[in-house]
Image 1 (cartoon, helix red, strand yellow):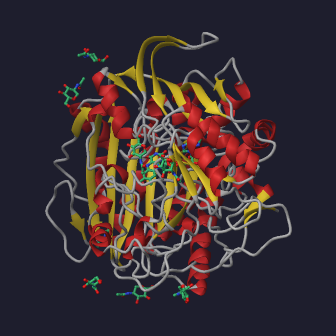
Image 2: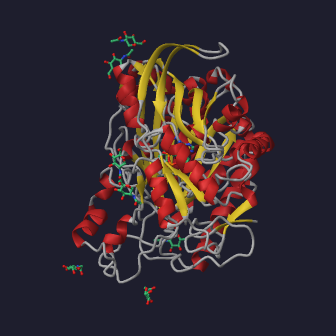
Length: 604
Ligand SMILES: Cc1cc2nc3c(=O)[nH]c(=O)nc-3n(C[C@H](O)[C@H](O)[C@H](O)COP(=O)(O)OP(=O)(O)OC[C@H]3O[C@@H](n4cnc5c(N)ncnc54)[C@H](O)[C@@H]3O)c2cc1C
Ligand SMILES: *[C@@H]1O[C@H](CO)[C@@H](O)[C@H](O)[C@H]1NC(C)=O
Ligand SMILES: *[C@@H]1O[C@H](CO)[C@@H](O)[C@H](O)[C@H]1NC(C)=O
Ligand SMILES: *[C@@H]1O[C@H](CO)[C@@H](O)[C@H](O)[C@H]1NC(C)=O
Ligand SMILES: *[C@@H]1O[C@H](CO)[C@@H](O)[C@H](O)[C@H]1NC(C)=O
Ligand SMILES: *[C@@H]1O[C@H](CO)[C@@H](O)[C@H](O)[C@H]1NC(C)=O
Ligand SMILES: *[C@@H]1O[C@H](CO)[C@@H](O)[C@H](O)[C@H]1NC(C)=O
Ligand SMILES: *[C@@H]1O[C@H](CO)[C@@H](O)[C@H](O)[C@H]1NC(C)=O
Ligand SMILES: *[C@@H]1O[C@H](CO)[C@@H](O)[C@H](O)[C@H]1NC(C)=O
């Protein structure tokens, strides 16, 4: 099996698996001229003129960019052709910050339309496809205000890109003006912050929307505090992560990303910078915390909780079933398939004790061949010492030993949470996946748990990677301020799991895509049936999630749509599967039923 590559170069932390690039699948499908109401598109009569764009450029102090797709350097007939630069893209760019510092690259490529993939000495045509036409490289609120006003007045599509990690293309769009928040990097420590309304007093930080996890951690370490953030060190801490939910190894201790936010500064559709907190514009404050990014406004900065310094201790082990057995140790191989799957269930069963002790249980079930499987496990315990962690996991190890899995000598590592390090890079991927949030009931009801485990096992046997993250971001651990727009099912959940498909979205034929979709749907239907009352995590999900409104937002959906309509009545902002997004769709590019952003955005 070809093990999928990772979008985040910090391999140890992320464990997110997605395929890669090869042939151009979506190229050449031009959006038809639609008679209905559409956003103004390049080539239209009322598309802004060169002098209009120059005026915008002046009003943003020269920060307007018109970037080519980076892989243009690989195309023989492009004026940008440069074989040395193309070699860099193919060989090294993914291990560097090249793509993260590129104004238009999105790490998951298919939403762009795969119109300019890096292929050595390509004889094809590289086109802009679903990449935006112009980008404002914002370093100030004023520039963001000017960009929003320009897009609204000219009725052109507006998108927001921060790091480009979004998995379904909420960060890209054909014919759009993009606001790139990557360089909004301010940081100010607020040792004794008092929230308006008095709900929170304590240490906090004012953070720019462009700070990435590793940058936020460096600031936190300097001030001896903890700023919870995504596991992948290059994700944006205060863009997509807080607006979509935001889980971390500290979720069972301090709640979700949405629970860290005390106040926001946001440029709304009228082009004005507003404060959103529990007292000022509380509806906007509610919606921006988990009701989806890219739809109510552009966050420029936030004030977030700064928790006391905490250590994260991780006990990591694997067990594998294969042709021959190995000696006891932290990574044994056994030959008994029944014991392997019983061990698989035992690990997940340990999810509830883990989350109830404030921990995060990270797992990957992976098929190595038809007769060999491996289970990777990391029990992550904030605030416990290694010795306490050994004691904590002993019941799990004992039960695995009694099944005939000779795990021993597990040595936890410990580290101050904010001092986590790893490779800082961003690689491209071209895969898709689906996910499910498991309510506690799916674990405590034995019939449901058995059905959930059968369904999870079936995904692994069928070649998917089943990536489990047990956590419990309850309202109790979330603390003030509640409520938030995030799907309420999170509050009584004990696991979020991703089912990664290794199908490469670039090389695939229409028939192969449909077959892959049906195959994944069958597995997801079984998982949904075993987890009634669950949902799916907006930020790590299938763009074709059935009844996504309910799956992503649950009982908050209606309220989120009304807040969207109030703050953005003209739909200046739009991104797929955000509240109210059903009113629009991208034309002409979804023949296979998959929504790319390579086309004109029109009212439905
Ligand atoms: C390798 C990898 C690991 C991940 N690990 C985790 C994890 O541990 N925990 C977790 O919860 N998630 C994780 N994610 C998912 C991640 O949280 C989402 O992809 C998130 O949306 C990324 O946000 P971003 O700002 O970095 O990326 P972008 O793709 O740039 O933006 C994501 C979305 O947010 C919008 N947005 C960005 N900035 C703003 C802003 N300032 N104002 C308004 N809207 C904005 C964008 O328009 C887009 O819709 C991971 C993703 C990847 C690829
Ligand atoms: C915007 O202005 C700057 C500075 O004058 C210039 O370098 C840049 O090329 C301009 N951008 C566009 C898209 O013309
Ligand atoms: C690609 O083109 C360059 C420049 O024309 C040439 O030097 C190189 O050998 C070509 N590489 C391949 C693999 O064809
Ligand atoms: C590339 O563009 C040229 C000029 O528009 C066109 O003649 C050619 O067919 C295109 N090639 C491909 C592979 O689409
Ligand atoms: C964007 O702006 C930042 C900050 O001014 C600058 O360092 C960076 O080079 C700019 N990026 C591009 C592609 O212009
Ligand atoms: C950092 O914070 C921890 C936890 O609050 C505390 O025990 C420790 O003394 C602090 N260290 C410094 C250098 O202030
Ligand atoms: C593995 O199983 C699949 C489907 O059950 C089958 O098509 C394939 O031939 C098997 N491969 C091997 C190497 O046995
Ligand atoms: C395989 O493991 C199961 C579960 O531990 C056990 O019941 C069974 O006896 C084992 N089979 C063999 C052949 O060891
Ligand atoms: C936290 O981890 C560090 C090692 O990174 C260790 O020196 C320190 O003693 C730990 N603190 C606690 C409270 O366990």
